[in-house]
Image (cartoon, rainbow, N blue to C red; front, side, top):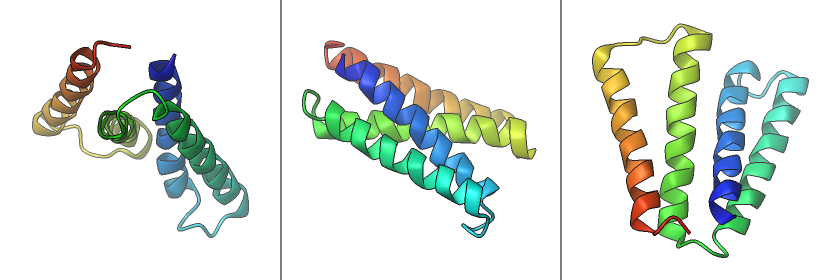
Amino acid sequence: MSWYVLLLAGLFEIGWAIGLEYSDGLTKPVPTVATAVSLIISMILLAQAVKDLPVGTAYAVWTGIGAVGTASLGIFLFDEPATLVRIACIGVIVVGIVGLHLASGGH
């Protein structure tokens, strides 16, 4: 169950990271509030996940999910470059996330 909570925490991390772009430097009230709420939810869920998962593993996976999701959405939403090197590096992060999950026994 902790892995699902961690996945959800990572999804909310993507939400607040993308929200930073929409908030225009935290100057637009509605996107700023949505960003802050997403950040708080993400942290609460991460805190719940580390009750059962090693903090180093959970933090690495949480930031990895956020990095992969944010970089991917940056390509699709904000026309950020989708170079082969960039996509390959995103893939390496995914491999790392999966590897950490497998190395932990997937519990």
